[in-house]
Length: 219
Ligand code: DC
Image: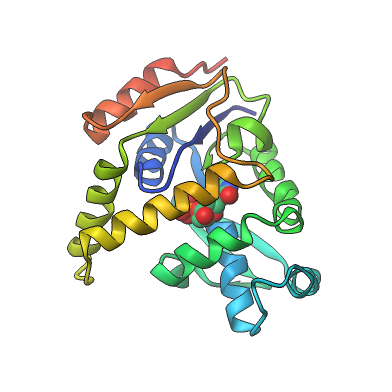
């Protein structure tokens, strides 16, 4: 099976670009952040103390995360319950930043990610896809953009959804998540030497997609 592995910091536009790219290829797209968010939702629903690794470990033994794709849209489940609509909130931004730093959490969803990529051609995006999950992929990309540009994109996205947003708060959240993602001991976000690095600061979504598409090896 073929894969495209994409890593990059929060707010860089990975999800948007990955979905368009997957559509162009006729493949599905796996948003791996959704898996860490689903575990965060499970912690909240089970009143698990997210800062206590032992409590999180107990919970992991009781839950199963799964994914399916309906008309190209990813649905993420905890014990068979579709939690997709609860994943993209400010609270889950922060809670998933905590869950994703735990080794036991990462190990619990590693096989799921690899199995999905074994079953079908897949675009996979996250933080450790090029460095760990799909190390062997022939198509690796690292997307980047300045923190200001990424915060602006998030801020505009929130406003367009009719949500309240304050640019400085969005920027501070983003800088905190960058710090968590890049400095954690386990599977930190890095740009691997064999990834094509694209600075998207001054590029349109379509320009980024085209640049990636033109560099993908399909054999
Ligand atoms: O991409 P996202 O914002 O939905 O990711 C949610 C959290 O999970 C974020 O803190 C980064 C983390 N994450 C990770 O550690 N590894 C991945 N492959 C994907 C996301």
